[in-house]
Length: 161
Image (cartoon, rainbow, N blue to C red; front, side, top):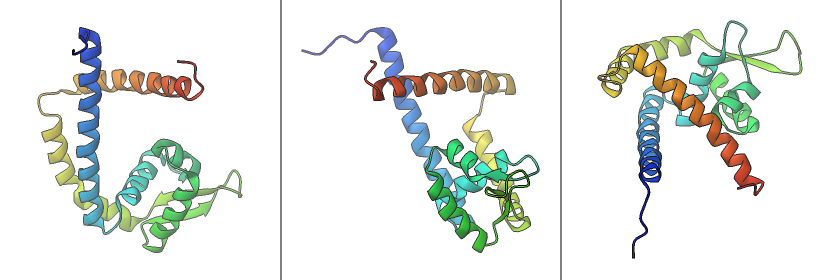
């Protein structure tokens, strides 16, 4: 006999499957962008994270690792490769020379810029029917769910659920 699912539980399951579908599609999109730049998908995401985090002085490897939820050693390994490909500049932090700050090179900015028209068209397709206020509202709700999911994951890890 099939278990009866409450409406809220059904809605939550539907939401989770929708997120899984969106994640899968975004991975494919990122793979395509990466291929156009001649790099891997993780390297593409690292470039995008650095671009997002850099507010004029570069971005640290730890900040990039935290944003992407990956190990800092992987970021170090991949950013050295991106530096060799002239997509990144790495320099000691002005605040603490033990740390490296990374920023996109002009080459990287130019290559990413070439994708901007395609990215805008893709975003228009993905968010068709949503205005700025709707997307802002959605981002706030997703941010709240992301924060709660981190808490739930921590509770599950320590056996508190």
